[in-house]
Length: 330
Length: 272
Image (cartoon, rainbow over all chains, first blue to last red; front, side):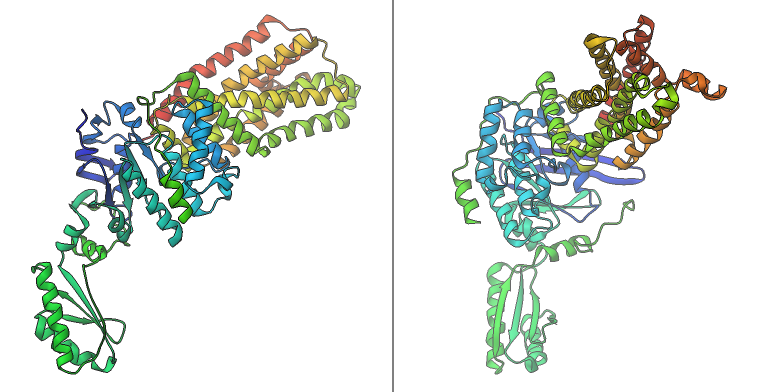
């Protein structure tokens, strides 16, 4: 019986010249579900995945995928994983059908089985009409769907899904998310790398934040957010002229700083980082009560968790859009 | 979007009977199929390689043939084996080009992360190239026949000549697969192949009898491997082949493979 974790890595190091792309990385990914690997460009996501997918040998450390050591038994690893995204592209001059059949034949399916499987996948991914066209004529969304289809010609136990929705329109984006959720229901473990925090939030049950080649935080999306603060209250007043008065009332009520937003009628407050959910809700309700007692009309208000953007900023001191500076890790 | 949902719900995950394993012949043949598909979708790659020799055959035969050999017919007998060599040599770069593209576009990483016999990608490209050589050789020979070329070596001689050039082309391809893994862009591979092959083709016995050349050039032409290949091809097609001429080509081919095939595989595996 196989009980090994999907991925177990410890002390991984990979140096390119003077840059330590991966610097003592520790990572455990359980089987099942989507595991989000989150970090800015240059944080070490790509190198980590290249090592785990047997494309790059680490300079130091251990890594095993589904119980097989990536260095000692790369073939066993390769037989159980699939890569998508920037690591593994489709043949642009071939048709969608040909790309699928090629993959199926390389994985050992007979000519007939390969053709049949390719047809099934084209249908399932809404590409039946495009199957005979060259991939270079596909839209970004179609390409990404075919990319995922090719990587599940034989369902892998572990799928590396690399920035699957970068550059996609919202509709294609939700289609890709739908496919990922479906794959997980069918039993595949997905390692998702992304720069989009809401994508990790939407899909991942576990997240590890990577920066400068090491994991700096991990947990469920909820845990990561809770580590920064319990809730963010956003209030929009009916009359922008009341804002300064409202700000003073709320600061007095909450005992924390209340910030004006770019919207001239809106205010935000990060409520009591140490308090539990319920207390934050109570505090917010009290604040709203105080405002209306003082005769200030409230347009809308919302109490939410902090975004992962805020989490990232709090953890790393820089936001996700900035590249981590290379080669400066102590 | 809704179409995707319903379709996915009825989709099954393919069950795996055991795990896929590398298979030498099957993987290589699949990769050869891929190379041929690419060639079919991008016929301009073969067309480019054939256009030049065809143009030169026509140009040299009708423009200079009379002056060089007394008659266009006589000259064609001399020239056609040479343009055949030129055609094949120009195509030898294509596996290297394709490997370079695969590396730059990420297809190489896909294959390297799959449970396939790793040399299959390269071997497959080269098998695909053999088919291109055959098509190109048939076209050039066909043109020659239309223009009035009648090989004295007969069908047997021509077939042997084509077989010999396939062997040599296959061997030279390994130089380009090595360079395809070293050089940064496909453009660099193309330019280098042109820069090497054009002088080698012109400073050889393809177009003119070396005896008419100045001494220093004569020396170069005589050591130029293209000259040796053309001599052997001419002898086979015109029915005057000697074992030494053919043997030289086979030996050179073996040498090229012995050096550049392991080098290519080393570069392929070493990319990390």
